[in-house]
Amino acid sequence: MDYVIAIRSYRRSEKIKQKTLRILEKDGIPKENIYIFVGTDEIDDYKKSLGDGYTILDGGDKGTNYCNNKIISYFPHYKYIIQCDDDINFVLELKTMNDSLERKKENGRIEPKGLKQINTLDLIKKGKDLLDSHKYNLWGTYPVVNDYFMKDGYTTTLSFCIGRMFGFINTRDIIIQDDCRDDYERTILYYERDGGVIRFNNITIDADTYIGKGGLAEIRTIEKMEDSCKYLLNKYPNYVKRKTTKGKYPEIRLVK
Image 1 (cartoon, helix red, strand yellow):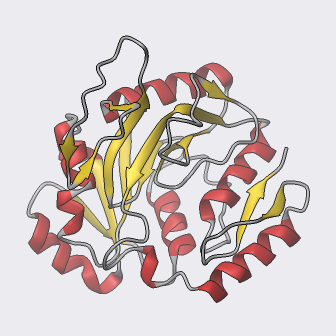
Image 2 (cartoon, one colour; image 1 turned 90 degrees about the horizontal axis):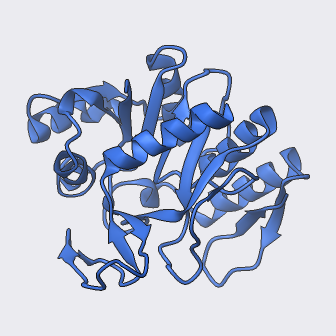
Image 3 (cartoon, one colour; image 1 turned 180 degrees about the horizontal axis):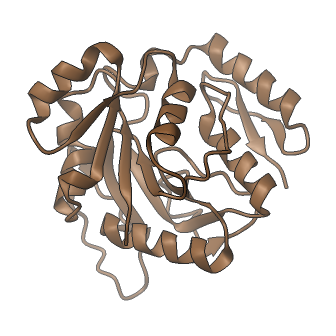
């Protein structure tokens, strides 16, 4: 299977080693398959921190959507790309009745009781098989680390594919404009064009979203998130509605 891993990273040249890169190395993914897109002025810092083996590239300093489009333009047409964040702790799957309920502490976090770690490469292969069989071009995972709401299997309807980790075929014609909820817009555009997306409802990604220095937490303000809401509501009124939330950010939800 021919694939690449594309990681967006911002001011986390040390943390990425402890999080996402550690997971990928543990799961047997070769360094030569991993491409890390960083801020223009951070390339030397990442090269010094990570050493040889990884391909470190200029992801620009103009926001997440700009970096997303740099990734699309860098790789050739129809390349199978797995894009992920730099702060992943676990790749998790819903346990069955036969699975052990033993909990593990790793990467500074405790594995949720109803979930078990799985090999990232297995997920990558499973995602590609389903894309091929359904003739779709995007797969994603369940957006919340909560075994109470997760279910077995996958769906092909309009279901949010969170940006923590997702796989896609690089058709180069899906261009993201939103800088805060690029994963929502990506899901809508692939669904609208292909008639469906693969969303694993039994697999989820535990990550340090909005935790610590670096990453998107430093650039996503309440004002920017509100602008994002308005943009998506206006551009995709058939797919997007406001969502009531107790969090500090205004939120949306996808509707079918």
